[in-house]
Image (tube, rainbow, N blue to C red):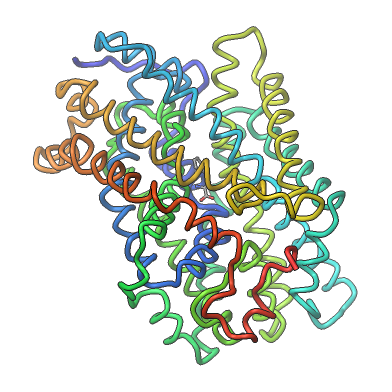
Length: 485
Ligand code: TRP
């Protein structure tokens, strides 16, 4: 069915570039620079990276395209979009569950995301202090990180500040809030990462880092590692919870969706790989061998580099400041769909809805704050509160959401519907995409789940005890999660 163009009531992206920047801003964040390196380290490197890249290519990109066109066809918040499209296709309204689950997952992810983003704010001010006082650098990165995590009130303050910042942008709305922040700051972050890679090359451990990241040791591929890699692909690309679907609703129909999805996917994957190439040489120079990592990986590793680089403290300041911005543009996308939904379904204004959602997320985030100190001994399935939030959201709910989105795009929407959205795509590319969302992506996600069901507990052991196996004592000192010690 050919759809005429209409505008979303929430506003529209002003150009193709604006959408690409916003969606890239959503995708590029802590997932690339905090989560990707430490999960890679915990999974032992090469094999994990290879599977992650495969997941991005055959599962991630097709589903991203599916989210974009579903959103654009519905032009509303994900829940209402799915209701509209299900009705048009005479399908069950149960498909709106994708949107409901997406809202839940958004709350879950943002609740811990905001606490971690708080660390970047804290480190930014730490580097301001270091520069202002003229001291040499961060004397003991491990101890600095450990003392940050041990104080719930400090963590809570930074978490609160980050939530307020996120709330303000979402309250301002699509054009004024989202577009502006990504335009200048994201390219700056990327340039800075490249400088750090340059430093990594000078450490003498760059080759080791390349081997670590790209030489697959197939003996390390287990169902748990595959599930982790798939979860990371969904997390990093912002897929599976209808965040990109919400953004797609503001995309003019004149803009080709296929090339746009590809650009976003490449940018996101590029930043993750560059982040790895910046961090692993430094980590290896400081004693990382095979296992290890821990939630503090990025925060305890890079300061070692900043301590010895010239102008290192300025680099430290710029790095954590820009990482905070990257986290910010991602957090916004996690809030957009619940806020848009509240605006559609209630009498709340956008700012009121933003306050309400932020408050809920903030409350849930207290669990994460406490999981690094007061509650660090409370474990379920071997994981603390934050790890459970992350695991359930990223490794289970995001892939399941993605599976449902693929099926919706491939089986519920008709061929003529999706072809109408992708009319500017070459017919062979379109056929490939449709085959991927109908068959390969859902089947792969499903198989990964089946194979992982028996090992969910195994993976929780890894989560509970990072950095113990196959790690030499040096790296344990550097990399073990100090909060747990
Ligand atoms: N992709 C972001 C990152 O890598 C996080 C994020 C933003 C996200 N929106 C999302 C993750 C939606 C999952 C779903 O940091």
